[in-house]
Length: 166
Image 1 (cartoon, rainbow, N blue to C red):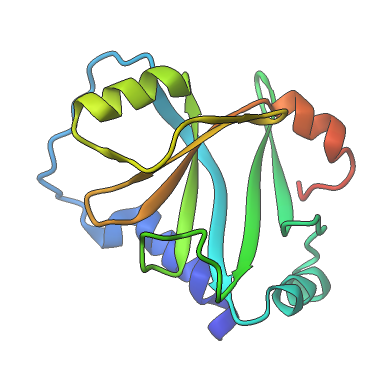
Image 2: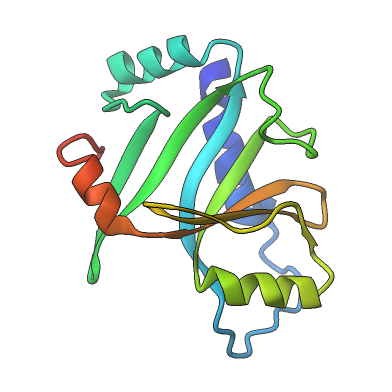
């Protein structure tokens, strides 16, 4: 039962805890930097290797060094979502005290960071670039650490050919 808790928590977070008549006003004006999907689900585990092995043997996950990579077909090509259990002792989620972190796929990370700064959002680090995309970390209004990722999916396609969950 404990092993499905992170997945259940994630579903609750995505559905807004059933608040269908939310009064939250959303600015839908044009923006050049924006979230376009979820790029990863990360959470703490007492034994990440055992957790990964359990998911592989019981749910058929194809594992990589970080966990498992889900592949989705889109009209523009494949997109990926990384599932990763982290050790309980990780400091990667700090300064948040929550046992999870969500990675959002974004378009135009540089512009989005400018927009976030202008809106008073706490930017935790500078944008870092890797072969598979650019990353930055922010805090939301509840002090949840969020990872923003502008991916280069073609690199994942080469790196993980036939090693994804689809």
